[in-house]
Image 1 (cartoon, helix red, strand yellow):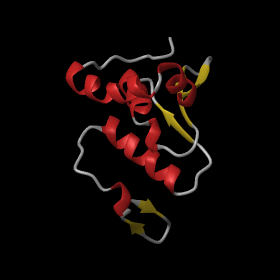
Image 2 (cartoon, helix red, strand yellow):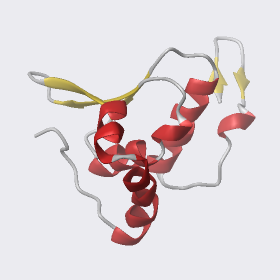
Image 3 (spheres, rainbow, N blue to C red):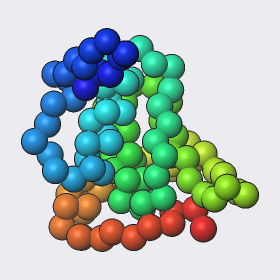
Image 4 (cartoon, rainbow, N blue to C red):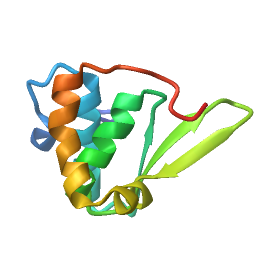
Length: 110
């Protein structure tokens, strides 16, 4: 959905029946990268969001970062570097692991 002073336009590219915000964030990150943005920053303290960013990083065509921390200590985690360290096979495997783990812990950067 795009909001301006004069109108509200629905964006078909990000339309989804997905209820979980975590996956919708990934959908929006992919859309931003395909729309020509030079990088995408996801702001989240949720470890699930970070895991999903790693798992779906191959769908984001620009640099992807996760911003986390506190007002006193902000960090930008380079998802590309994390995926390089893990390797493509492990990153793709995270998609299935995440579905079955049911894990939902917060505060990635503490």
